[in-house]
Image 1 (cartoon, rainbow, N blue to C red):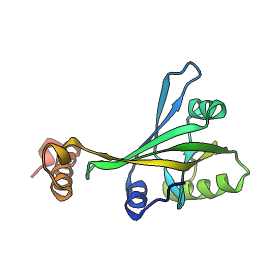
Image 2 (image 1 turned 180 degrees about the vertical axis):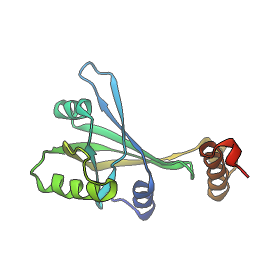
Image 3 (image 1 turned 30 degrees about the vertical axis):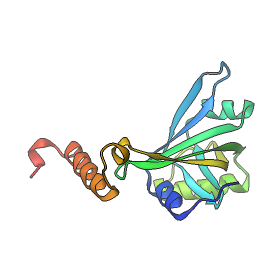
Image 4 (image 1 turned 90 degrees about the vertical axis):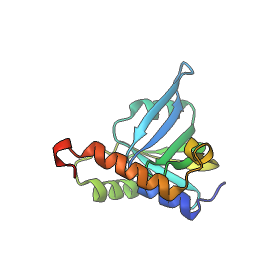
Length: 159
């Protein structure tokens, strides 16, 4: 068991996207983006199966999973690994996560299964800029905020 600290909690709750890795039947990796990662409690995180039948099939055979979540602006995050449990509609876990999902995204999102990862291992993930570029978090955040703003703003609307 590994408890989530404040920084891990903050990155999970502020990130807009995480990636979940499972193993396909033939042994090849399955990597699936998730926009529904949420802290379940001090040592578990959860996500909703919105459109991921492959992930659910893989977890039925092998509950081992890894979730990577990165704060794109701060250029750092965490890798969480352990065993997952799949919860079907009608379970209290599914109802709890579905309520959060509907509040966040609005009604109409499919909620096929809730998946809860019991965290066994946490590893930090850092951009090489921290090591080789001697950058600090504030510098990287400002740099990438500007880069994303310029990418999202049409050229004729930029100042």
